[in-house]
Length: 340
Image 1: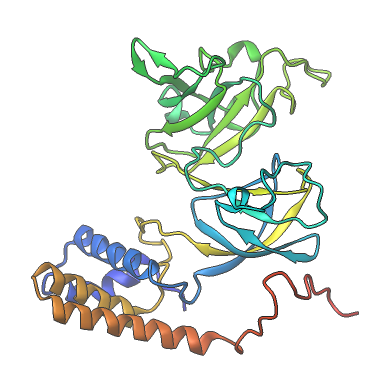
Image 2: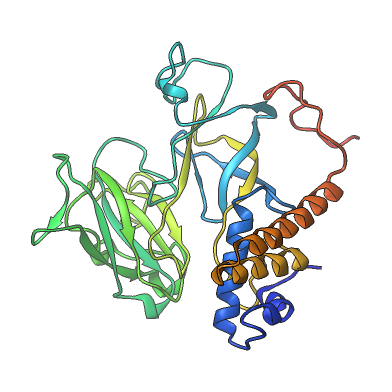
């Protein structure tokens, strides 16, 4: 059985303010309990497998994923290194896409990127945003970054600039219409540092645009890969997007990895949202711990929190098939093909 926000509210409301019916307050307490428990360990259902494609020798993680804990590429397992991997003494130095090694490891680049992907070369690009929803047309997105002179982009002395959200032609995803009608940033960006987006009705696609690119299609108004590069697709409720990226050595845009990923915390908002922590007993104990802590009862709060952790530890132990046998962080079978 899968528990949603609606289930969590019904199961835990008696533990919030002595049984309040205030849905907003119960939701806030549930989200706080989930967030605090997720910082402790990778509990049951928080580690999932995904297939992720690389772009520009990098991997961008969507907001639902916190980090990659293991992966294989081209059927072979490899290592995930931290941010200091390129800076350690006697290390590999700076890894580029042409790093001469048969091994393809990941290097964490941090989680301070406003888009999933970057453009594929060092030139400057204009930025445009598109949505399928007519209600989003004309809303403005704020962009912050540097220009070709490495100067911070300003508007009337204030950092940043705004661009209007366009609408896909006839509301059809991917259909842009004539280039003469495109609305994009007045200044090209050499680097995009962060984005502030309003709450929208639909998903918003952000793209890098090169107006001097020559269209290769018969219809010269049709966008090509040289003309437009996909950067990100924002959820309607994303307002200050922030993504994690990994650099991958020796890979191209055609590579894909099979990755074990730890899920990231994001608050449940809608009644049909699936709760990231699925144990109702653990959530009840954690909510009690928060209530006790708010009342200054620190010892009792800690005991209730430990009860929640013990429940999740037992649940995780019961869920494991067998203890893993670790020989090396990079030695393993890799992909296991179906038996014929």
